[in-house]
Amino acid sequence: MATLRERLAGGAPLVAVSFGDDDAEGEAARARALGVDLAELRIDWYRSYVPGDVCRAAAAFRAAGLPTLATIRSKAEGGYWPGDDAERLALFEAVIPEVDAVDVELSSAGILPGVVAAARAADRPVIVSYHDFEATPGEAALRATVEAAVAAGADVVKISTMARGPEDLRVLAGLLLRYDSMIVIGMGAEGAGSRVFFPLLGSRITYSAIGGRPAPGQLPFAETVRLLETFSPGYAARRAAGGDA
Ligand SMILES: O=C1C[C@@](O)(C(=O)O)C[C@@H](O)[C@@H]1O
Image 1: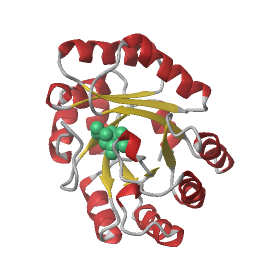
Image 2: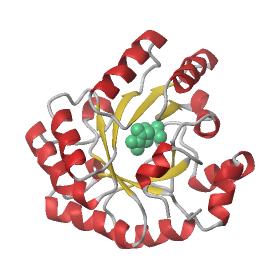
Image 3: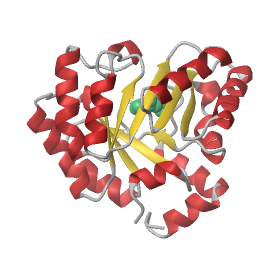
């Protein structure tokens, strides 16, 4: 079976679902049975930020055979992390060896070099991300963001912005076509189609919801699977092979 790094580098897109720390064993078993490709561990949603507890929740997903992505989203980019930079970096350093990849915001400048260094030391790919829940910035600003994320050490750059209409989707699609190793998402009702269409153009991960706290415009997991099976033969083939192709 391909590693997560290999899957992020090419081939059919991955369907991720985000999880908190309620019943990690049960959620992991259900997600595995449903054929989720990647569990995004939204550690900023967790009830406990004690490193041992966080690592145990991560281990439950890995034990179920599900690749994991650790995210500790800052409040500045729509997340819930209540602590300071030193605590967040320490938590990233503790959890990185227990997961398959890590996501950190470009704007988290105080911890970004440390997170990249910890990921490199553990040979884990790094997604450097940018979120705007209000609007989609102009193309020049987004290009500068992508280039700064690459310069910071991103293996994959994620751009997730609120799409207010077709013009925003054109900007986001242009960005996706311009660079390799991208995850691009148009959030909101106007962006919802991008969650299926952009993966067909090469966006590496699409995020979907199984209950929980769906992001704006996120589609349910089952609907995302149905649409990707319809439009992505590569995804359909991988799923038919039980996720292992
Ligand atoms: O950044 C992303 C994308 C997302 O915000 C979405 O819109 O699907 C959901 C988040 O959990 C994830 O980390």
